[in-house]
Length: 164
Image (tube, rainbow, N blue to C red; front, side, top):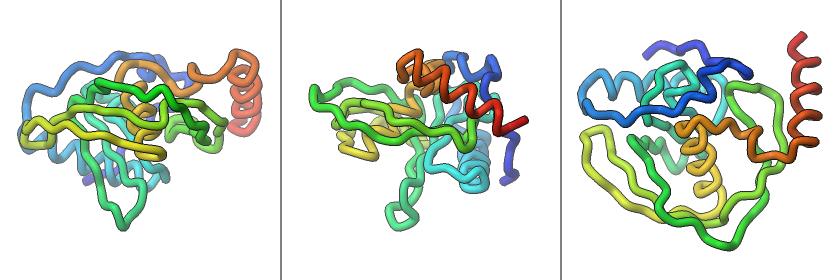
């Protein structure tokens, strides 16, 4: 369970659309464990395989220790609510940079677990926001693309100054 290097913005891999997982084997479980350890070390509440340069549809969330770890293989959002909410977002690939993003407040999504079993669930509020954020990343959409151009440019300039 090693901690893996995280791709940093603006790495081109962060724009890569991830392929579906087709092998539900021990290597997938090991990758999920590596993602969990990497996310905790970052620290963060969510991470995708793309964040470490593995372009497969796998994401790990741990919003709260009490709720436990959630692992989603091949997640796909099937419904978005009309009601939205604004939440502060950031990325393990751009540490320290955050801004408010508006997203649907509720979603319905399907995914597979590490054994390949299909599931369908609904998510609300913070969980819904996190799943949307990570599915965006799996689709090659970095969270900055959800900001207005002005906010995005300002945040990038500020972030570039802090890493120099």
